[in-house]
Image (cartoon, rainbow over all chains, first blue to last red; front, side):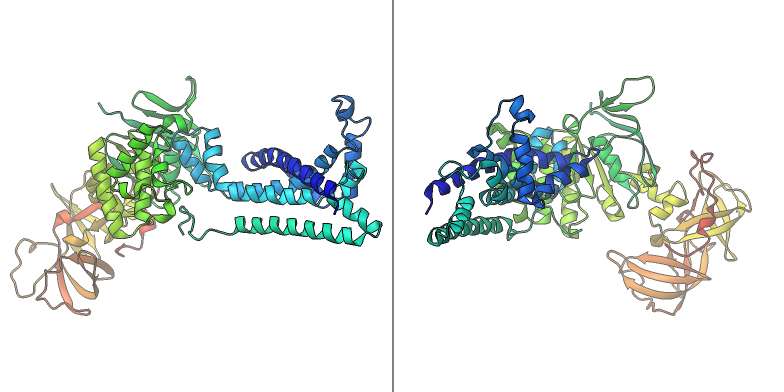
Length: 223
Length: 387
C-alpha cells in the first residue's frame, strides 16, 4: 500500500473540496438569481470539464500554469509539478458537479418564501443566509460531496500537471496506474479496494441526503 | 387618528392594464372579481413586490410609492414598507418552527421571542409553538401566517385568497377571528377573493374588480342590491337577470313589458327612457309562491305571474326552486318552513308574485364612466335566463 499517495490524495481532496465549495456556491447563486446576456455561454463553459477528455483539461492547465501565462508572470504563482497543481485540476473537474447540484437546489426554493421574507422586513443577505441556503442545503451538500468525490478520483489532468513524482505529487489514482504499469498487482488491488470503498461511502451518503423526507414540505399544498 | 391607505396606480400587464384607485381605512375591504382580474397584482404593488408604471401609494403621511410627472420618484423596498402579507399558500418557512416563523420579522432577542409567543397565543396556537409547518393543519398554518404578518406591526394586512384552500368550518372560524382582530387592532385589511360567500363573511366594503379596474366600490349590501352596471351584476353572479322594455314611468314605479306581462319595478336613480330595453333582476328570496286557496293581500295588484315548477332542491341555507315563467327560468329561494303544506312538486303549475321593490333595474353602464365606455347591453341577450 502506497501510504504517501493515499495521504496526498486526502490532502488534495480536502483542499479541492474546500475551493469547490467557496467558488461553486457563489457561482450557483449568481446563475440562479440573476439573468445576464451570455449566461448560456457561461453555463456551458462551466459544464465543459464534464465532457472534455482529461488530457484536454490537463493541456489547458499546463498553458494556464506554465511559463508565459499571466498567472505565472504577473502573480508569481508557480505551482506546476507540485501538489497544488493537483488541487487546481481537481477543482476544475469537480466544480461543474457542485454548480449543477446547487443550482438545481437553489432554483427549487419557492420564490414565494423569499417574497414573504421580503415583506417581513428581511434584506437580501438575510434572505439568502436564513431562507434560501437552509432550504437548499441538501442539494448544496450533495454537490460538495459529488465534487469532492470527483476530486478524489481525478487522474488524467492531474497526471499531466503534477508530473507523477512518487512521494511528492503522486496521488492514489496515479499510483494505481503506476503499480499496474510496473505489474505490482498486490499493491494495485489494495489501492483499488480503498478507492472503491471511499467512493461507495461518498455516494451512499449523497443518496441519503437526496432521499426525500417522510413529511411533505409545508408550503407545497396541492392547488 | 388611524392612517389611511391610499392607492392610485397604473401598470401595464401582459393581458390587461391595471388601473386601481381606492382608499382603505381601518376596515376590511374585499377585492372581489374573477381570476386574472389584477387583484393579486394590486396587493403586490402595495407590498412592494411589484412596481407600477405610474401612480401613488401612500399610508398616512408615508409615501410608499410615487411615480408621476414633476415629482421625484419614490419606491420603498418591501422590507421598509413592512406591509403584512398573508399569501395564498401561507408561505411559512418550512425549516423553522411556528415560533421562529412568527419571530422572523422581530429579530433574535429574547424580547422578540416573547412577543412572537404572545402573538401565537393570540391566535390560539401557543401550545403548537415548537411545531414545524408540516406538522400543522391548514388552518393552523394559516393562523401562524397571520401571527407572522401581525408581528411586522404594520397597520395594514393583505390577504391574497388566503383561506381558499381551507375547509368551510375552518374558514368560517378564521373569518370570525379576522373580523375580531381587525376591530381589536384597528387594522387596515384588504382581502382578495373570488368567492362571494367569503366576501360576505368578512367584508364591510367590497370593490368589484374586472379586467384590472374597479367597476364599483361600496358597502357590501349596497353593491349587491344596486349593482352599478350589468357587468357588476354578472360578476356577482346575480340570479334572475331579465331584460324587459320600459312601457311606463310613474313617480315611484317603472312599468316593464316582460314577455308580454306588465310588471312593476322600483324607479332607479337613473330613470330609463320610455321604450328602452333594460336589464333588471329579481332577488330569489323575494319571489313568493301564491297559495291558491288564500286571498291575496299585498301583492294582489301587480306582478302576479303563472309559472311551472321545473326542479327543486335543498340549498345550504334556503330551499331552492327553479320555476319556468314563460320562456324564462326564475330561481326562488325560501326558508325550509315556508310552503310546507303547499306540496310543491316538479311539474306543478303555481303562481308567483313579487313586490315592485324586488325588481331592480341595473344601469347598462356605470353613470360616472358612461362617456368612457360604450358597450351596448346586447351581450345579455339571453334574456331572463337566471344566473
